[in-house]
Image (cartoon, rainbow, N blue to C red; front, side):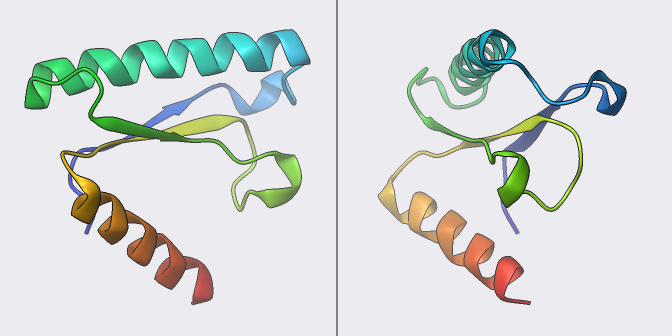
Length: 88
């Protein structure tokens, strides 16, 4: 239901990231998102990166969600799908 959706995950046995690891993970995720957006849609800024802290995530292990978005309506669709998924 969400096209151009990617997950950047790290080993579950690595435990929770330290503040330094978290900063590095976010930089890696944004760099990867920009690269994917440039390759897939021709715009390095056409993405959203989602990260949930330990208490707010459903799955164990640290990970980032990367979604390529080419406009506000696609972003609105993303949030609608995520709200529906979490409501269920």
